[in-house]
Image: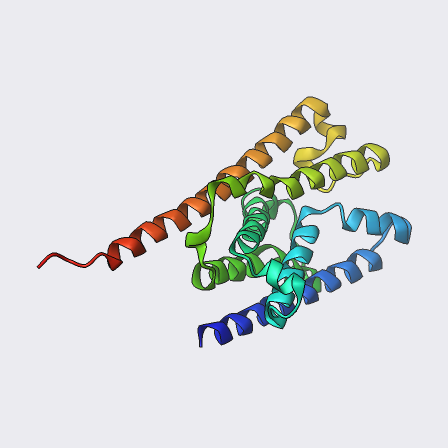
Length: 218
């Protein structure tokens, strides 16, 4: 029953994720001020977009099941937790820092809420309910930084070439290299702390479960 419920939730997350990603691509192309190639580079310069693509892929393969190699990979507790960290960062940064920067309307508002609030919330719920988080290991937190580091390098290099930066806190044009790099390091530190927090939650749950299994003395 739990496996079936997990597949249903995974399907919902994948469906909403793909809709939001494709709709955002449509909107950015429809409102483009540069060439299609330039727009595509800008599209993938957003951590929000890249992370939601990873989420959509992950939950698509979780729904399809372990008969696929990628299904087995994306179903691993370590993989799902890493992706939960990434999409949680998307939700935190947008809702705490960026939400006040603009007020989208219409389809863009729907897409924004899906990408930054609805999908992150559903992923966190899936992680809490269906992922065996007691299997997580402390050492996993450091490999989870590989994707954010690659993303940050891409965003900064792409920005230095095109002068387009997806987020104000990495805008070298406005902040200069030192401040932008400090902000980047701060975000990576937050990701590491959140990763350790989720792993710690798994360790705590394991400890609680082990105490429940110890029979009481007569």
